[in-house]
Amino acid sequence: MNHRLVSRCAALGLLAGVIISSLPAQSPKAISFAALKGPSGIGMIRLFDQVPEIPGASLQMLAIPSADLMAAKVISGEYDIAVLPINMAAKLRSAGIPIVLGAIVGDGMVSFLSPDPSIARLSDLAGKEVYVAGQGATPDYLFQRLLRKAGLEPGKEVRLNYSLPYPDMASALAGGKIQYAVLPEPFATLALSANPGLRKALDLGALWTEATGQASYPMTALVVSSRLAQENPAAVAVILKAVSASIAWVQAQPEAAGALVEKHDLGLKAAVAAKAIPRSAYVYQGAQAARPSVEALLKVFLELSPVSVGGRLPDDGFYAAFR
Image (cartoon, rainbow, N blue to C red):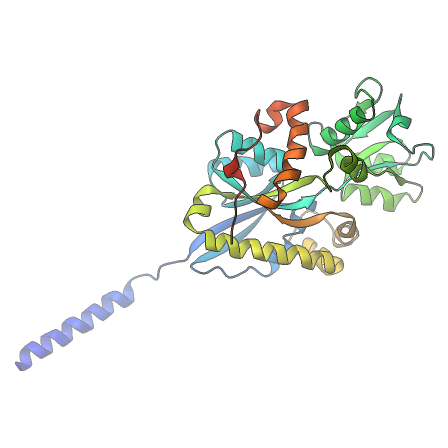
């Protein structure tokens, strides 16, 4: 063999090795997962502390202060996975935003609170003024639906007041400035902790079951971009499994979960989060299994304000299946 040729080949091989080694390593594809600050994000808190490993991808956890900002980022395509109120998720889908429902991660956590011992049924509210958290949100439409079921016309026979933000409503109720309020967690827990004379005068969950036949009503949806669902369903399945495990851990370890909520700045102090967790209906239910309860609630939105869900129920493709 020609020694000059051998030397040249060796040199070329060495040069190729240098070139290959100098090329940048291909970074794993980043997947952005945005959770809402406050009670909706608590179920995902363990993912903030122990980010799961995703084959061929990296997971970035984000905490977002409001549902409106979250929706804007989902619309722009900036977030791959996001947590939203269920009616907002439905509205985005109806508007043509390419998202699918991955799971329901929060069920009904709305309470009717009052110090009035005379309130035992919805009919006892005739002529009263009830402060309601969030006009046009789930607590509002849920309560209106139940009033109508009881034969009471909202706004006429029962006055609905939306003037107070959630924290102010909890404070006013605890301080005796208002007598009747519909509040979600953790604000219901804040009011109950501050005033032992308050009670859950009506069981809204039981009334909902009586009215609809559904065991509960979904409030919080985890949505996935259609692009990610199509391109990497295996990664989505791993993430959803981690979410399910996180929710189970939060339910079993409320004090430890509360500490992580404060550590990762999810909008609540550790003690408040820990107290609220046992009263909050954190669940994990896949999209297809959750469809009956989702549609039961969205039909109420559709009846009272069609625009709140985009004028129609989500199509079949909204309810994804990941394995």
